[in-house]
Length: 104
View 1: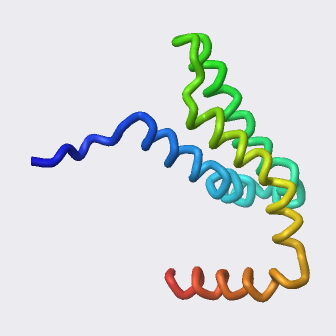
View 2 (view 1 turned 180 degrees about the vertical axis):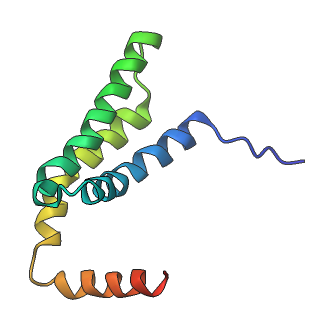
């Protein structure tokens, strides 16, 4: 018999992984696309900071997934924005968009 229950680490890892795409969709749906560059990185950063504060307040220890994964996502934003706006990445982005459109 297998145990299908996920661990806390797995749930937190998945949660952190979906923060940036979810924030991007939310900003677009709210009509705040002109502020996308600033709002999308701030939303996951605030969420990770609140999780760190909650863990520290309740357990006096910060879960490594939030500390390491959250820091990696937040630190990667300048690089991700720089790459996403570069000349060489535009064909890659258009290809991904075509695939996404074809899935609907």
